[in-house]
Structures are given as structure tokens and as C-alpha cells.
Length: 357
Ligand code: 9MR
Image 1 (tube, rainbow, N blue to C red):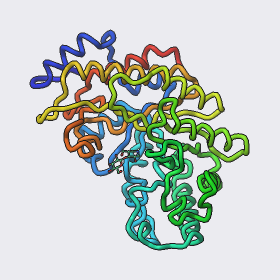
Image 2 (cartoon, rainbow, N blue to C red; image 1 turned 90 degrees about the vertical axis):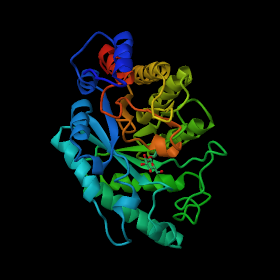
Image 3 (tube, rainbow, N blue to C red; image 1 turned 135 degrees about the vertical axis):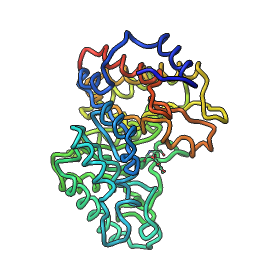
């Protein structure tokens, strides 16, 4: 795969300089070789774009709906469930022999107005949430192998404290001020709905050893001791620092897997400063590739780190651009025209060098 013209010269030079020995294998082949799930977040409305669909099916053995399983999309009104977009993605995965991670049953964002502004009592909210979790998990029973049950329940300003949310204490589902009790109830509901599904707690900025990951660790340890059905921790890995503390990231993955839970790297992207034309510098592309390589290598060095997902795969569609008002971008392994970047080669190289997982 060689990219022609325009940005092509730069990429070609970088590929030549930094690529591992030429290989006809795809990232998916390399992931299969490494016995690792390698996936990406997917937008249902893009599946009709030929280049999007063919790249997705060729390069990944795992996918996760980026937004299609959030309440905003699944729950147009209090009474009904609209599975159309999520089903499209799941059907695509099954048709192409890919596994599916579900994202996300409980979050404080992307909730529909009828829910967020509904002024429900805790008892009513508990009933609504239990029904939602059980209906969605049952709908995908046997098709979604792992769920992000709760997403980002910890706070940013006071790292490690529980975030004040609709589900916790505004007004919450009846477990306000009882720490992680509301989270535990959600895991138990999901487990009742599909005892085979792997249940994950997914968190942002808990990648390194820090107060937030300490709080996740304490919760996971407590849940495991008491038999709460939690199987894994999702570390998002939205990276904007081109020199991340890899020793800390690796130690953090290690301490979670030592508790007997799996780690999935769930939302990996490495954003770069971009100019008005959306392009990063060649040097940043090289550093970005190195970060991708190091993250893959860190995951592969822990047998309990069983999946890596990028948050999208083409720079054409990524949350980073709108989030940074166009100042950051180019965060993913494929460029806007679906040509592989140095990051792609670095990931594939790391997977190919793996002794098997
Ligand atoms: O990528 C998602 C974007 O399309 C949504 O607009 C955004 C809304 O907050 O959520 C993005 O995905 C988030 C994910 O669900 C949870 N972790 C953080 C991700 C980036 O914001």
C-alpha cells in the first residue's frame, strides 16, 4: 500500500525510513498472529462509504460503535428502543467475522433530553436504568462479547472522586453518597441479562499510575473480592503528549491484570498539532508512530491485556478535530484518504514481532 502524490511523498519517505521489513500482511493478520483483538470505533452512517467499509473489514478483527449504542441514539423516547444504527454495525461485524464491544450502558453524556431533564425520582430512575441495561444487553446477547457497563464515573477536578451525575446523586438511582454501590448495581443487572458477556469499567485519564487509576484499582479490587461481576478495565488512551510515561502506563496495565481482570485499551488515538490544511509535520508523524508502537508493545507484554482499539481509524472521521476547533488532528493510523500512515506500520510491526499472546 503506497500513497500517491500530494502528501504521498512525505509518507513514502517516512514509510521507507521507519517501516518494518515490507510485508503484505494487514493489521488484522498481524493481530490474529499475536492472538490479540485489534479494533476501532465505528460510525454507522459511514458504512455505506466503500473505502471506509473495506478498510474496516480488512484491517480489524474487532469493532465498537462510537455513538450508536449511547442513550441519545438508542432511546428516542421513554418507551421505545431504536436499535437500527447499532444493529447495522453489529451485522457488519458478524458478516466480516469481527467481534463487537458494546459502548456504553451508563454515561453522564449523550443522554436524551427526556431522560436528562425528566425530573425522575431515584426509584423511577433505577427502574428506567435497569430496564435499559437489561433490554440492550439481552438484545445483543451472543453478539456483543464485552460491554462498557459504566463509562467515566470518576471526576476530573478532584481526581479519583466519584463524578456527580444523573446516575450517582442528581438524584441518582437510590445509592447516592454510597460510593460505588450504584456502579455495582449496574454490573449485576448487566450480568443477569447476559452471564456470558465480559463486563468492563471504562475510564479516561486512568492510563498511568495516578489518583484516578488508583480509585479504579480500589474499586476493581473491592468488586473482585466481593464477587461483583466485573471482568475488565477499559483504559481509553486518548493521547496528546508525544512522550507519554510508558513505564507508568505499563505498570498500571500490570497491576490491573494482576487482579485477574482483563485490560482493553479502548479509545487509542494520538492527536497532533495541525496547520490550516489539516496536516501535521513529518517529525510529529514519526513521533506519533513511536507512541502507537510503544502502546501496542506495552499491551502485548501483559497477557491480560487482550484488546486494543483505536478511536476511529481514518483522519477523515475523528472526534479530535471538532473537539480542538481544528487545532489538533491527524490522530489515527490512516490518513484522510485511507492510506496507511507511519503509525499503521508501527502498530503492525509491533504485532508482527509479538511472540503470541
Ligand atoms: O467520539 C465520540 C463523539 O462522536 C461524540 O460526539 C462524543 C460526545 O461526548 O463522544 C465521543 O466519544 C467519547 C467516548 O464515548 C467516551 N470517551 C471519550 C470519547 C471522546 O469524547
